[in-house]
Structures are given as C-alpha cells and as structure tokens.
Image 1 (cartoon, rainbow, N blue to C red):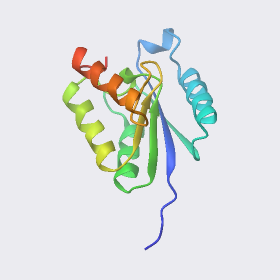
Image 2: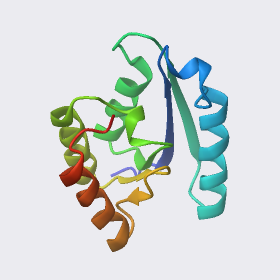
Image 3: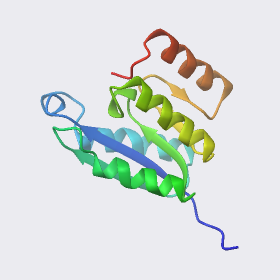
Length: 132
C-alpha cells in the first residue's frame, strides 16, 4: 500500500462584508502561515474562497482531499470562516475526526491537538452553537 504524504491545509474565506474589514485573504494567509511556522506543521497548502455567495469551491476541493486521507491539519483564522449553519459545522468536525485530521481556529484558540483546545471547542459550541 502506497503511503500518502499528508499536508496541512490553511483555509481562507472572505465574504462581501469582510472586504472592508481586516479579514482579507492576505491577512488570513499571513496569520495562518505564522501559525504553521511556529507549530512546525508539515507542508502547508493554502486554499481561498473569495466569494459573496454560499458556493465555496476551494472548501469543497479540500473536503475531497480530506476524504482521500491527504490532510493532517485543517486550520482557519476564525470559526466564522467555515459555516453559519451549526449542523453543517458539526458534520464537518465529525468528518475531520473520522479522517484523523486535526483542526485549529486561531481567533477562538480552539483546536483538536490538545485537551485544552478540545475543551474550548466544546464550550464554544455549547455556548454559541453557531460559528458566526
């Protein structure tokens, strides 16, 4: 069986409202690159979605990579970069767990690397329920 070289994916997403704020694609990439360097994460692949509507082709391409077992880490600058629908977000987290992919959101300081990060994620979901 051929071993697949796993990568870290840093996902950047902006909506129409973000363009006037400090969450540009470039800002997100910089924050995620600094995180990856500090954590000595394996080869990093950036994917971006710069769309105003709900279509997120970059995100869905990464979901396929996750299903194929090619991703080790999935990182975002903030939970609100993913989905505004709690059910979708929870399904995505379950898929990451099923495929043994670590998750991290920088702003909320949540992750699935550490017990403290997992606890923060559970608390965040219990108190807000919605990433946005």
